[in-house]
Length: 388
Ligand SMILES: *Cc1c(COP(=O)(O)O)cnc(C)c1O
Image (cartoon, rainbow, N blue to C red; front, side, top):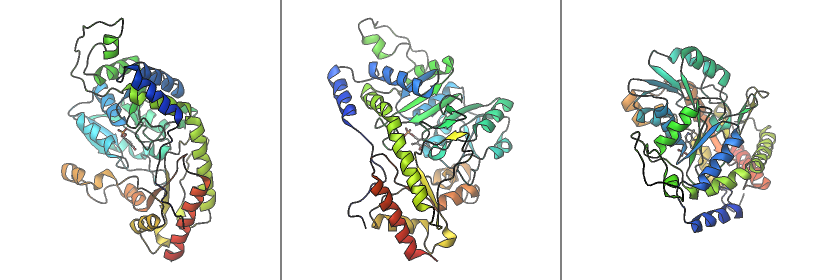
């Protein structure tokens, strides 16, 4: 058994991030400024979209996307219960009602074949969540959106680097929202980005991100700036700082190197777990159509073959010095949604079944191949004692 605890996740911060951060701290400009602008420009180039607006979080990006699209009270927005709190709460913050559609059993992505039945006259948008980094069936989602005149805002928190039909996620929907939270594939500690091909939406999101003020502070306080500004809307305070962008610039520069390591570890997990019948490894649907970003490696316990449940399996992993996590507790099982939306257990059975079996095991570039092997050894040991 391993001696040292293997955390579920550790970010890859190197000297280049540290140097850039110190440069920013010494520069005299800490909030949104030249580094944020540089990060936006690099990110836009990486995604292959027309506009990228750097924000404080993916949550902020989704909120602003909905507001910029005019989503308001009385509207309905479709998403899935198999996601983080953020995806549904922004719908509520925009004043709309969230409508859940169950997921596909293999990917835990929104089941595109069930969306149409959930569309009403009030439906204004769909928020597909690219779970774990596996892109949703965007062809179906975009076709439905077109025939019903709906907007598509993507929760791309897991999908930096994911591709659909040879295009990067972030370049195909109305607005895509990325997260740079500490455990995402690219981190700025906290942070996010909205990408779009629409100038109008990019300008609206930018304006709303800083109090609806006509010129941002950098434009006002730099050499050629003017003190004068106008408030054009009741905006928000969602702008990214240059401190965050300093990290982002270098995280993006090494992104492909880190992704290659993730892919290598994914293949190793697949190979080593192939013989373990009590565990199902992540499924890739439409291999020739998509590229997975491998934000998460979620195994599915074949509970029928085990004498212990998922909770006990996680405790055993922890006792074996292996960190793990669960993505996600379906939203309709949480008290808020049960109280305010009347949801109950059984409403979204596919999501519930996926959840019951899911464990996210460590997958990140700071791990070694020995760490990957240790995780698999621990899994095999637990099963040896808990098999039927
Ligand atoms: C992390 C995450 C978010 C929220 O990202 P923040 O940048 O922390 O706001 C949203 N959706 C999903 C699916 C996530 O995993």
